Structures are given as structure tokens and as C-alpha cells.
Length: 167
Image (cartoon, rainbow, N blue to C red; front, side):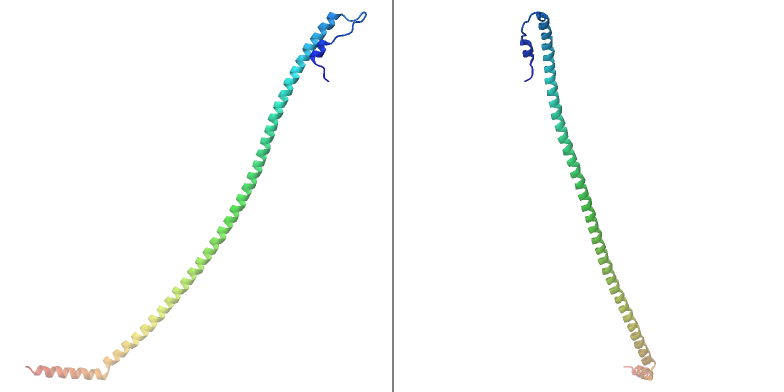
């Protein structure tokens, strides 16, 4: 058990023959009690201060751990967001490529269809021109034929005869 200031103060020494001066011993003990009380008081204050510092240190260690964990979570989240963004970008790129390919294929098909329609119209125009030319040539043959000249003579004679008949 630790020695207390009260123990020092109440300590009685046995009196012996030719012992120490009682007043000097009492004065010294009083000084020891006073210094010991101050040391105990200072020790108590220091213990309280150490306890406060340890409490604050524990608090800061917990904050540090929390911040460390938060940083790790933030890094992981950032990595996940980055990977997700890269994946979505790749998906968008692939979809855009597919859409572009579909558009190109569709436009090529439309272009082929238009080309075929143009070729069909050109063929129809050639056929039409040929038929029209044949028709015109046939009509020209008719107009230049002997039958037509005969008809002209007949209509001329009929016109002259009709003029001669004045009613």
C-alpha cells in the first residue's frame, strides 16, 4: 500500500536516548508532507491530463480509421463508376456501330432499289422510244403510201364536184 501524506504526518518515532531533535524531524516531516501532497496533486492532474489526451487520441484514431475507410470506399466507388462508364461507353459505341451498319445497309438497299427503278425506267423509255419511232414510221409510210395519194385525189375531186353544185 502506498504511503500517503497523512501517514507521513502522523508518523511517530520512538524516543531513544540521544535521538534526533524532535522539532527538526517534525519540521522536515512537515516539508516532506507538503512536497508529497504537491507531488500527489500534480500526479493526479497529470493522470487526468493523460486520460484526456488518450481519450482525444482514441477519438482521432477513430476519425483516422473512418477517413481511411471512407477513402478506400471512395476509391472503390470511383473505380466501379469508371468501369461502369467504360462498359456503358463500349455498349453505346457497339450500338452506334450496329445502328450505323443498319443505316448503311438500309441506304444501300434503297440505293439498289432506286438504281433498279432507274434502270427499269430507262428500259421503258427505250422501249417507248422504239415503239413511238415504229409508230411514227408506220404512220409516215401510210401518209406516203399510194392509197393516201389516191384518197387525196378522191377528196380533191369530191370537193371540186361539190363546188360545182351550188344549191
